[in-house]
Length: 386
Ligand code: SF4
Ligand code: SF4
Image (spheres, rainbow, N blue to C red):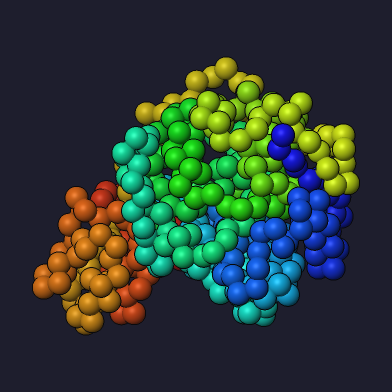
């Protein structure tokens, strides 16, 4: 039987959050069961984009600060990592997102290290039986001794809900995320990719920041709902099952979770999930607004979504006039896609991880739109994240 700890936590007061996380972990066997001194722990946050913590679009920086303080007090080295969304629009705003969310400041102040998955390299995961074959996932996920997944409690206009299981999509670095969305625009198929990632990356603990949640048209355009909850579990599917029920959803109604249920990623029968912590009866979040699309029988136009992804598609290209020939890009490319002499990129090999773009000190690696109209549009909008 899986256990989900549900804690009441009114605000982001550090002492309060530390106390609630610690007492929750105690119920699961205590920190000693999971960690020991000297370990490197990666906190996988939800950093959907350059949004401040008070929007409830990202894992709150003070939540991460509390967890970082706990881990450092246990003698651990702390990494805070993610790769932002924005891939569909052909931009990769991870560095900006770390700053705007306040997470970079927390890292500086608490002695943690930011791991921007778009510049850390990628590791090939053999998944010939997976939904899309082999996957490339961010390197720090394989270098850390322990991973703590810290999703945000949010709605999702397309997927209806996003939580612990879906948060691991950010393990895919750079623009490759857009390729996955294109290959599986249907939530049911996309769910297979999410499960592939969850099978490759298995965080030891999942701690959901539901102190403030996002209701309505999440994951970025919804409103803040004071849910005042922290959910903790070693089972991401059980955690999401409980979180969904709290906001008035049944996991069986969410197609993106079909694969997780079919492939036994965890427990999803509420009667087989033990609630613990401040609640032994499931709390309901009164008046919590779901996305308007939920319950609608109108079919989603996946063809249109693919067209948008194609229209906005961007790829790295090296501007030879700006290139100083330092070869950092060549050496850091995880799939050796850049020719040392010509600096031409082999797009058949390139996994669009963004490493070259992130690491070039001379701004010689540009993100160029395949479609010149899209490029002009983004320029016109003056996007500072392109
Ligand atoms: S990192 Fe930049 S400057 Fe160095 S070789 Fe690559 S493109 Fe040229
Ligand atoms: S060329 Fe290499 S480093 Fe650059 S995006 Fe492609 S795979 Fe990543």
